[in-house]
Image (cartoon, rainbow, N blue to C red; front, side, top):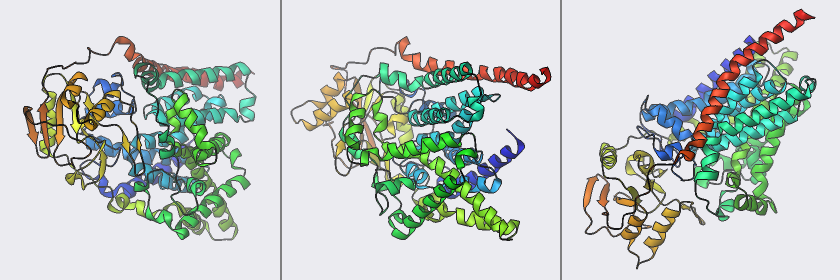
Length: 587
């Protein structure tokens, strides 16, 4: 990396840090930001579920494993705030390396950090998605270096793929798509390389990508029991119009998430959304006129990936597209990754950030030609290029107070510790719903935290209730408990014991609907403010058999092999660089 490139990345990282501090605001205070799917706890245990070997669908693998390891070094709230800030710093520095000047680096970092995609995914708690998004510009740069045969190219790309794999399946899928697009758009330098070398690079990428992502794809395809996906989820999670102009313009500006509860009010303003759309069009047109695909080795591939991501995000919203996505989701292994289609717009947002950087360069050059002076041209260019911030003001200061840190009640943490000391058996949490609202968390909707507060198996209702429908979950045991609750003649306690559930945790600070079993006469094991734990007894209790078998760990072993291979690629890169430097002397 040259000194100028390193300097641009520093400027981008600094811009990202400022954006992170400004966006998170009060959420950075001591305590936990608990919103929708973002649930951090003081110390996440290294359980079979965290490792992805318990047989459940590995939705948070291996990112929960990373959090678990980090939370054994620092308190969970410190880990959470560090990871959230890393999103802004990482993507800011990453896109800064894809432009040519420091001014463009600042503008591109602003656009990459402050946009509806980041705001809406942060509001819904998808921190793993955002970490994967932050890796994308680094993946693009590394893929171009590998494709062109530059020293350390393979090592850089392997490192990028391993890091993005740690963020979960979504980031990895986007990264692999991006790498494929970069390799599909080779420049003259790449074309001049021998065919054997290029084939070797592709084989290398496939090997590292498959091994690095084995911790989540292996348990999903091999360990977790197969369950038919609910096709209703396609319509429930397809992109929506969060601007007055429709779905496609919403996606063009980086928005369009399916959950209305996390939309920002100004997005529905014709004037503000219109300015944002004009800014997008102007930036993209400027990038095209400047032949932006020639401005960086990764630019052409990023442009292709951005367009594909935009099309994938909007596919289920066009005529016939919903049927195509439904077929993929219900018939292809791993097709469920297409269900929340708006996440693919992340590739477009990274491209758009580079376009904003290019626009800034063009504006600055025009002002300098008009004798505005160096300082004047810089200020003018940055002011005009700051439209992403100007069109999303309510992202500031924790979403204008929407995101604040909260502390778990000490009595709740004490109850969690008490559960860990009890005899073997699973825990089912009631009322039977997936999300909670706690007074101590300002009644913000949040995923049930007990699955992370307790290391043993915890069953909750994994059906997802939406405003217009309920999307069926994938856990067969949870489905049986829900069915028993809805059937008056069923002995719910006996049903739970047959599924290995020994304890019922009833949250008394939650609305009783949609269901609480009859716990009268059952022994009260422990209680805290807002929660009571009952022992269902051992009559008919069927505990799950033993620990996971050795083959369940194959995915984790694959991830470990990827790490070893990646570390070994750096010395090989050093030898290749030395050979490259000595080659002219032999002529």
